[in-house]
Length: 194
Image (cartoon, rainbow, N blue to C red; front, side):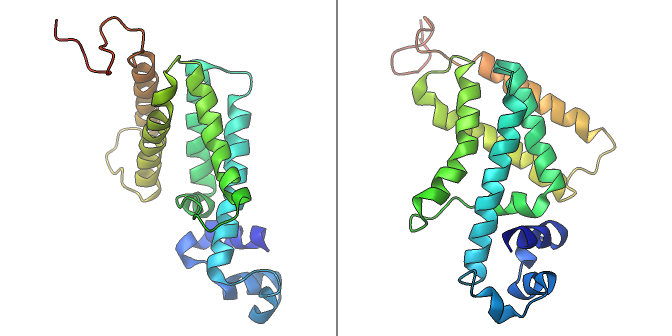
């Protein structure tokens, strides 16, 4: 049933997911779904958790055998491809698990963060910067992909080319990220004034 719901999301939009649409796809009456799910919000969470597992697998596969800049490039492209081919599932990913959700759901959502953390290790970033950098990476990639999915790039220049520029900017920024042992860096992380 979750897979059918995910297909509804991809074809019609995550915001258009309904129990009636899923029941129709499954060839059952809506009340029959309540044997498997506690309602629409529970079904939305199931789609989100399934999508989180799927994108973590996709990103992990993209990173296998790569490190540093090569891994980041491959993962960024896989992230964009996932969003473009599975737009409803991608939309379901944009809500973090709630505190009342079971720990298993939170762990599934965290897997893609672990993929990004392992890539960042190849850039030698200080441990205390990793969460901020992961949020920055996700925010940058999501911003681009969300605009693309919504038709927000109307100029004639290649969107693919623009995406590659964004990815290379991410790579260069990470290569030049301040390191704790950087002599130009003060202990509190601020630049020295001379």
